[in-house]
Length: 164
Image (cartoon, rainbow, N blue to C red; front, side, top):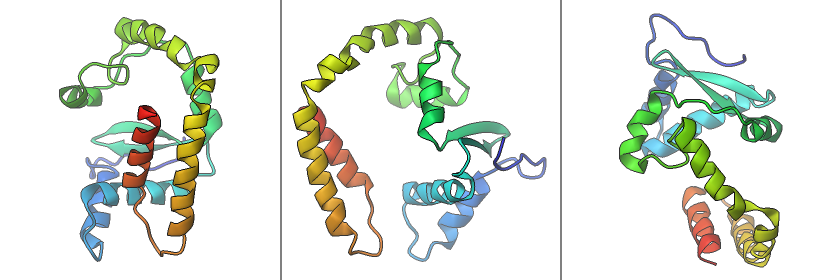
């Protein structure tokens, strides 16, 4: 699989690149911006592949860079247990659809499936289109700038779409 390789002498793996990026940033970006810069660099390096691997604490993290690969993952019916990494997220997110595994994941997924049926989503198409157009107009204006942080506009647009 494309991506970095683990090293005995580097237990942090790709975290070292993240730390280096953060510490050498001229304006000391926030940690999340440094993290996304590292992801963007790895995507630029391996983005022509469907998926690639990053290593953190000798644990492989598989990243998907093509929609086809994500589609194959999501349409799979195999139930897999979550990695130990998800144990840390349970304090923040609880055991919802993203963090639970096994039979708990399967039962919750079954409950949510009808909510995302195409007939249901068609009713919201007008709302999605309206807010997507607002977001596209924002990005069009922002293309005049050299750099734009997109996290806040994306969060606000998502919230607008959810609230209708």
